[in-house]
Image 1 (spheres, rainbow, N blue to C red):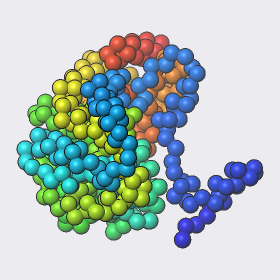
Image 2 (cartoon, protein in one colour; image 1 turned 90 degrees about the vertical axis):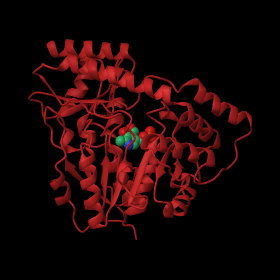
Image 3 (cartoon, rainbow, N blue to C red; image 1 turned 60 degrees about the horizontal axis):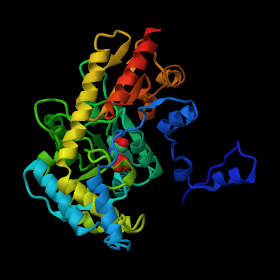
Image 4 (cartoon, rainbow, N blue to C red; image 1 turned 180 degrees about the horizontal axis):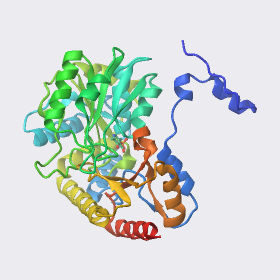
Length: 403
Ligand SMILES: Cc1ncc(COP(=O)(O)O)c(C=O)c1O
């Protein structure tokens, strides 16, 4: 039975309705990233680096595949787990990355990485159960747990100038008998922290022993700057096919398809029908013409991805050389993903600074508290953007810092 909430602040009858919502819906957190964007609305020439997307539009060859599919009449309901060609393309993509075959039926198509997260969380937790989230972490992960009636438990990553660090023992100690899952987002949004393969092994061993799930968000795998290997370490390199791991992934970042809302969930084969049922009773599947575009992206998008990675690498280098040696700026070089997460020396609440930067420097950054309490002294800047825009933002930030 869901409890009703009383909303004391609301006097008009429309707002009173809020008190009759389920607590899960009523408590759905608002996004602080959307908050700063709203704050900046109508303020003129603000360079928007608050959102996790680049300036590149989706490449033509991907858009064309969607148009062709529309022209061919692909406008009907389709397979709930996704069109077979896309599931095969995802399996082939994984085979290219991890050098072994994957069964296409392990992959089901979702309406975004976000929906994959929401489904993964719903699959493994019930009301009152906990998910441990190394944090700072992408705001929507926590929200997905709250909306499912669960309890997100932040486990702080540690800031060190040479790189953010997960203390594995602290992660294990954070687990209680209510813990049902560990949410491991590596490379991490927003800190750029990347788990080593040894850390992933230790986490997997622990999860096996404790019989808890891992939700692996590896959407930034291709954006890895460690230099010792091509892509970031992945659970796919060490896990068995039937380990209790749910992988969430997305077309958004690699292929510049943020607005398309297509992602996928990778899971043990036995879960395929359950995932299909969950898709059926939420979106009932992703539009087939978008799936055709995603298939083409996976099959023919490697050159474009290489370009995206180079753009991010160059953006990262620009930021490192602009701010290295500046005593006023605190940051750790991001080892992966495409965010520069930085704070100002002596400033504990970066949300005020983020607003000042909108007003005084015309630069839009995401305030770190959006990523959990441990991020509140930092701000996030997305550097997978167009280089002129980034140069201009660095110039404005430096000018502001100098004042
Ligand atoms: C860590 C992480 N996971 C998942 C997503 C979801 O991406 P989308 O819903 O655009 O597929 C994002 C988006 O920013 C993200 O940063």
